[in-house]
Length: 327
Ligand code: ATP
Ligand code: MG
Image (cartoon, rainbow, N blue to C red; front, side, top):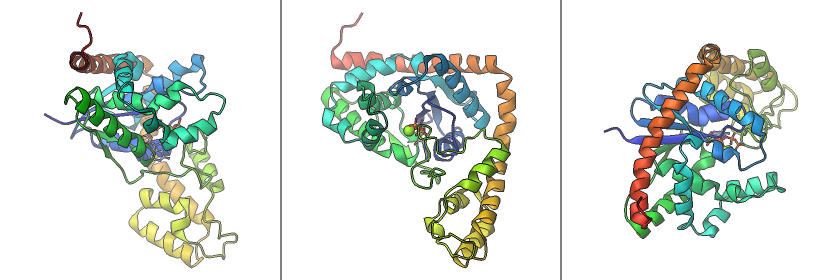
């Protein structure tokens, strides 16, 4: 039996190349090896202010993005979190074994508290517990995520251990799978690329927009003029080269930057071409899925059904273990 994988992305905005290089690209690569369930985690996106009229559309947009990136519905289950309400039932039970202090120390909570100071709700606080339920309800052993999610996953492991030691072993402790693009920095060169910050190159950006966005992206700030040498390891553009460019291009850009024989403009041009090439198959598939939305909905319905049947089995075991009424 193949081991199970779960991972999800919030439908909180357009999917960017950080999501792609940090998470989705791996999702696609490991589909053969593992039994994968990939979720559009809409309950999570309700923890910050959102537009109720737009949520369903964002869910479909996310599904189109995953399918266009290469998610194969024959091999993996693609589902919407709220199709499987057992996620929230398990969250409640996990809440009862999770000390509040564990959630208080999560870095994302501290950061989102500042970003949403007028709306620090219970859902925002409880986010890592729901994330734990998302994973362990499928008894997933692996979770392909970006580096920003590692503290959440560490907490998920702690909560899982606490449940198992309190009520009896049911769940495996989920482990991360981290990719080479585990932390993509935004165009500002400072913060991680993030839907909620907006410092992003989106997967669906046109080639023109990609070139324009890269042209304005922050590089090593030592390079004021073309003749100023720079330090590639301090440049966000170079970190993208390392993921997207060919070996000889990486070497010549690094050397050219150190010796000031190549300017940031030319260095960015090489990167833009490689990023555009990387996204080309995605864009081709996207134009197909954009015109086949009914098929996308069928895939979600089927994926949700399959996922729910696994989740229901798990909840039966959980209810028995925690001593809830059997009806
Ligand atoms: P939000 O700002 O709404 O939190 P986000 O851009 O952080 O959105 P998420 O939906 O929270 O995206 O994350 C989805 C997946 O993408 C997670 O596995 C996360 O680790 C990964 N990811 C998000 N941003 C990056 C990034 N900048 N670099 C690498 N991986 C990332
Ligand atoms: Mg996030």
